[in-house]
Length: 277
Image 1: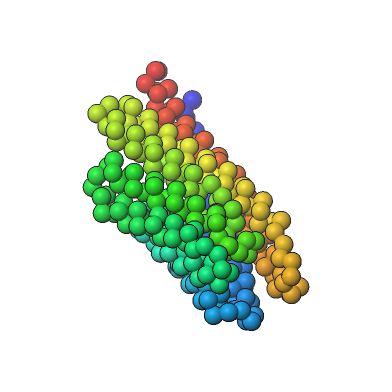
Image 2: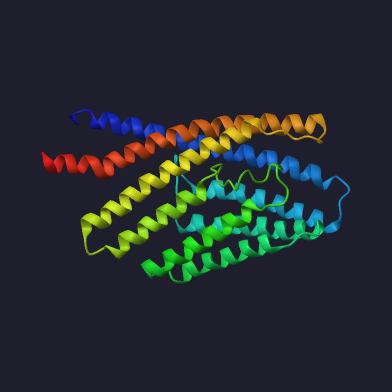
């Protein structure tokens, strides 16, 4: 039954490489569109607080772009503690932006403050990283607060944020929280290797699947978004770039769902079939 497993592994490796590339291209195009939006907005006559908020959006884009280069691991994407730390810097820029924009619009800065508190829990995650349970609790709480703050961003449908998306997935937070909860459960049941492995492996596959669904959602939003009130050349440029970004996101989402199914089979089903045999 597994005589073609070597071929299958090579095929999956190729799909994984293509998916990583497409994800990075989609995000890079999103960043380009956001920069166009940011620099155009800075050229308009807005108050100082509003412009400071937009400057921090540009800073967000620059840090975000740098993150793409740092997490690139050969032909793959490496998600580790360095990724979490740099993501916190990305979110810090957007929350500072959120605070200044809310102040300029005479709105409550509660959303931005919630986001910054969420980042503080992210710091606590690193502080308690040697504690398998407490560190997971800290990062779960932090992720929930960060997601809440992003969804309250005051300037939708600007190119910066789509439905709280990150890495062009509307369900990035849900995927990450599921992954961390399953890791927490695997740590709780660490004395039982079978149960612990079930939680850690199953949680990873489920998280990947959820993230892929989120990319389909965000991809659909990117290909349909419009920018009423913008000059036609600016709106046309941003829309064209985001359509391409959305197409790459949708293709990536499909591939990620496939990879999630393969990961679930390889980590949970395949080993048990061999045991039965």
